[in-house]
Image: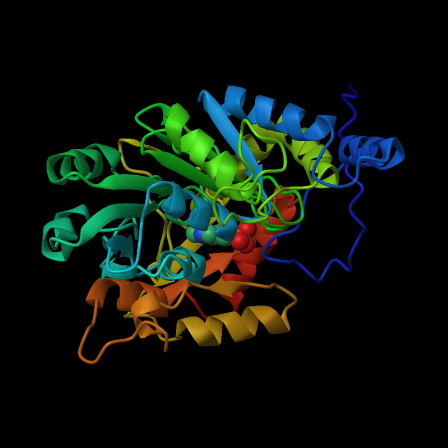
Length: 380
Ligand SMILES: *Cc1c(COP(=O)(O)O)cnc(C)c1O
């Protein structure tokens, strides 16, 4: 297998810096063309097993199943855990909408909780207030690369008989107390969308330590085909399979993953060094239990700043620097809002949060340029 990772990035005008861009090399190209040439372009073929095998190794888990995207991975996880209409699943309000949607797909109700002011992850101390007799699971989201405080979450889940799903879409490679996230709960869910730390274009993975959950997910993702009776279908299943072409990309990405993680952390170091003295900006944290992979390098514009987050975004855009505002908290979206429900920390963080360019293709000069631009538009 080729060790040549030379980037094939099309050179864009120097003025245009995207929030994120896939890091595709000659290795991805080689595997992709190999899959293409083999004729195995659908969801069977050797790259599927190779990718899943390498993923198990990387995550140090006994089971990993590839799926067609991160959203269906979440749905599959909740289905395998038996989540049904009338059940409730606790989920942070500050997350990508797919986390809440997947709960809704099962007919269950997402019960939102607020965020911590420093890590922006779900506030573990609020779990108790969200608990009802209908609660069946907690959907933990490791936001923007920062791992959640798993010990108290797992203790709470155990005490109350709840399942735990980890949404690792944004935290591939991140660690909690020295161990990769995704293996703490019952099921770990990954996304390989084009802007994620490793990508297959569209794609996802579910991992578990439990053989029964793995069999259920395999059954559900392959149209409900019986494991023992070929082409006999004994439940209403889904087609949630990944293609061999995507898996070829995934295998190449996984072989280069350690480099991506190191580069994401280097990006963060440069940003933090350059922005560290600014009184208008709050930097992301890495608390003692965390190994943050900074999927996005995220900052808050302080309340006391003379310019708002949105003004900062526009000014950067004019200078050719793309940014992304934080997610709207799910409880403020029309499908999920309820009169009078508010989560103050999540709302505040969402309004002031900004994701800066975070691609593994960024040079140190580009990051310094972004930081200098932030200063030049009037932030101090
Ligand atoms: C990207 C993402 C997903 C879903 O991923 P897709 O592959 O785009 O379906 C789910 N949860 C979170 C937190 C994400 O960031």
